[in-house]
Image (tube, rainbow, N blue to C red; front, top):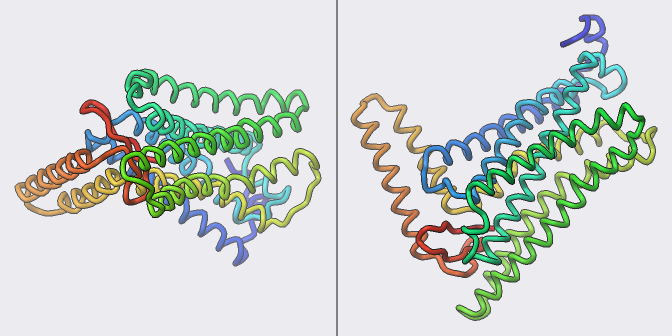
Length: 345
């Protein structure tokens, strides 16, 4: 809730630079919402996508939707200020604390879900024959619930540490558990995925440097996006923890925070658009939406049925062609029995 209009007007600064910054945040918020909602819509509409691996993708999308709905709007408003002490006059103290707490919660949930996705794919590639027994639907749901509970607890600890005057300890704890440990875990698991998949490809078809390079690029995108989006933010958190009076340019801080939120837009691109099955689902969903905008009910029914048949046909063809190798688009796939789904990096 805003304070008096006089204070709010005093806090706002609608300079050209601030308006441009607010515009880019608004665009990013919209793109993140659209991308992640499409991921969830495809999961809901197409039964073939309801696999254990995609449970983690949906949880990741849910976290990123919450980032766009609960965290980014506050940051959008703050773009129209000079990011100084006066900017806190825009919101009440309670609302400002709510935003900073929610920002920690949804950001941590997004990162924890990234780790869960890497764990699922690591297990599917390194131990494919016992994957379905090791990671059942129930266990996957328990894992997802646990990482959300962890994110909530991490958010709650902020209040406790601040009351005890241990801000430095909390900030360093967040840096370790929300960035350093997840980065190390993701790096180790994706490297193991790459080497296992490469060895499988060598045994089946001999060495293929082109496929090695494509798979390496895919893994580099996954790890690189995480580092580029999150490392600057956690570096700043570390600097402020060590030196509370550390000064940095407002423009630089806005750019670093924008990079953090950029990750919520990139996640559905990296984890679904690089997946052939999801790419086909996106196309069918868009075609289905186009059909539903028609006038004749019989035409709409025929169009929807044809898109569903096309999706299931291409899905079956993809599974029949799959093998323990590195696929053409650089993703790592494993051939599974009829009751197990494929996995992609």
